Length: 382
Image (cartoon, rainbow, N blue to C red; front, side):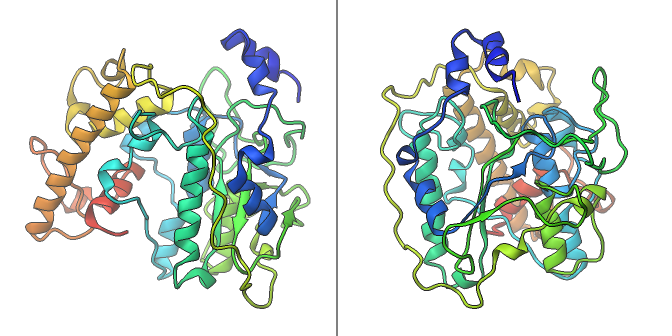
């Protein structure tokens, strides 16, 4: 587990001080309280030693289908593998995507604005904003009549380059589907990434619980992102595993260990205090993930058909310009969705810009993750 400081210095002189550092628990009071009251996993690893999208794909489908980096074009076109949502649907279970209302603010929180600070925990955003977001979600769930039926999981897709002392599992990890990553690395998907934080919250969890490594189903099994679909498969007795990876991954249903729900869970979490001394820089260049959000927005306003897509579109774009672009694209998309709804379209209809031909029945069978996500937002499945 060496190399964090050296690698950071290659990108920016002085960054090693940041990646070798961490937060005092009092600086992240919401997490401090949640960990004390519920459960934390101290041995949960990223599914792959890679970036955001490959790891998120493992959450949904226990494979990234060979992706080892953030591939916006492939994400927009859609990956072919089966998802846990399709498995649930096949067994007669419903699922939903929840979002903050009004939906026009959905993408803003990944951008740091003076009037609306970013709350996604990406540097250099103020971590207190992320704490406030978690607090809002927790308290909304805690006040819900469905509270006694919930398991709320807070997870990070990857570790962002920060130091960790726990060695990454590099043996006994099965490839999900035998697909090899692209040149020049030809990654075999036979090892995990670095540890990531995972907090589990439910009235069925004993106070202060700590999940260490799983007890199976194989001697080398670990908690990793495929543990989510693996646990869903086990709890709901779904027909089959998605890949060899979720068949191998540890499951965590055992954290719900109490015989009856607790009645002493805290209703109000501490209020985070602003940590960053400087205001948001709306003239800052976009991060890779912020660029992806702009490129995804381009597909719902027709700009993905232009020569500027995908890279020239975001070249030299600032945070402020990105927010304006995403806002306009999303508003136009919602207008198209409203027109489709008024015309009698069902919830599976994929809304497209005016100058594009709507998909016919034969084209509706396979939707990209982006299409499903945005369609759910528009059709009101909240």
